[in-house]
Image (cartoon, rainbow, N blue to C red; front, side, top):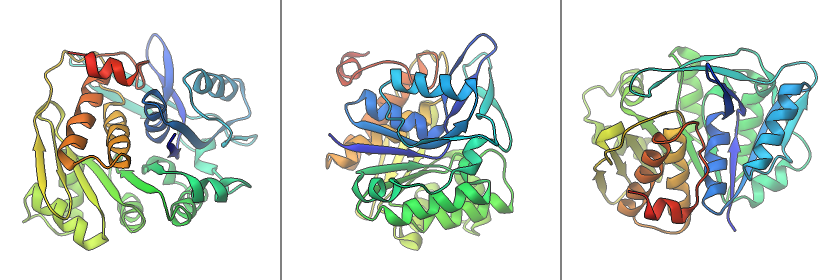
Length: 294
């Protein structure tokens, strides 16, 4: 069984009528657990009822919670989500939460050394304390496939610094078209096409794979040898929260198995599309459900 670590935020996604487990790295780990891996979450919650209930919910979804810290000084993270008519989420994230103060603890060194893959983003790196812990974990995870979903909320110099530093430590980067356009401008590479910019990232940061998600239009994956464009799957979207996290997890599962770039993109697309048809960032399913779904 492969071990996939979600490194960063775990929080409550708050809808007008319900709440579900959220946080991009945590979602990726939980999707991996649905697909037969051991999904481990490295994060922090508050020493509060919300934190207790969040840990319990993660456990019921098959996640390993041994590395979720409890912080007595800061509360459990929350994101308010409102869906538009097309199922597209609009987010309002709480500030200065427990996951912003993730600290290095006993056991993390062994986990970093033994895990098979790590999924990481930008949100939990917005504060120095968590950022230091996350970057240290990535540097220690020398044998793992390290996947960076840039997934930023707004743009400023701090975000650019996080992205540049994280790109130096990872193997796979994933972004959507809006994120690519912003990063391409910030990096002074506006003259490059999307595919050419992905290839530039590979060379500039010694990355193995760069992926661009395009929603209903599918995705583009680039490695040192080829560039593949995968058509999207037509679905009636219910909730697009977590589709990118599902895509990341699908990529991880396939890349760990040695699949081709084309097969990786097709499977990741399918997991993302399936997730869009369900409520919540991590619906319950199995690999067989994905195979038979149409």
